[in-house]
Image 1: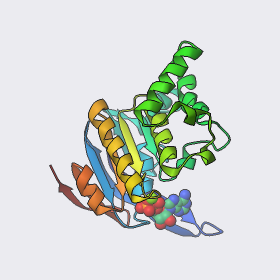
Image 2: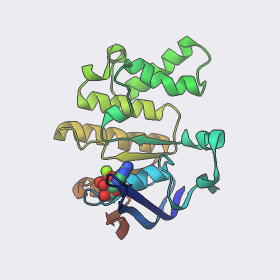
Image 3: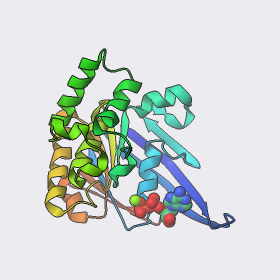
Image 4: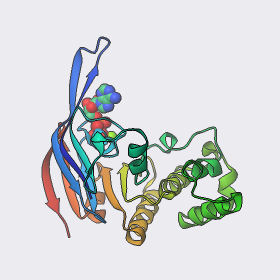
Length: 234
Ligand SMILES: Nc1ncnc2c1ncn2[C@@H]1O[C@H](COP(=O)(O)OP(=O)(O)O)[C@@H](O)[C@H]1O
Ligand SMILES: [Mg+2]
């Protein structure tokens, strides 16, 4: 279970940092194990900032992020990195997750190598092949560069990479909003299937209320940095 408590984040903008934006304003949020929480709201309401704070990719100005009872805002360095492996981001733009200069194989291999999950090159290849098939890609995609894949294929590669470390919590930040309708549906189906199989919990950020109603157990509505409405669906 992941909890955000009294999360606040203010950005300074303008040439001299004179303007301030309260992106997240005193937000309490909980995502239980195995649950899908949809976070909906207009552009600029603070959804991405809140999602990235829960992953500790952005440091909150105030508040705490608690993962399975551990306060992540108190951790540093190696200890924090250990928890980061349990949480992943699937961003709107796959280029945020995949280095354009790397073949798909190497992007997926990177977390496996950093965390020494494979004992040998063969074992690494087997792991990657298993992942790539699970997300509906083929072996031939592994040798390609990101610009040689379609949007849907890229998002599948991002999902494969996110799954390498067996995460417990994934923030999906509008993962299908750049895709055409039929590709959107197949990516959503894939994410739902993995959740059932692996018991992952999702914070699913979207501005598509219909999609939220289909996939979520609970919907939170964000406006001007605050959660203004909550609805249980199942
Ligand atoms: N790095 C940043 N620097 C300055 N302002 C930012 C930054 N990131 C987000 N913001 C501002 O914070 C507010 C919330 O942004 P964001 O979390 O991206 O909203 P959403 O994902 O709901 O569209 C917006 O006003 C945005 O312009
Ligand atoms: Mg956003």
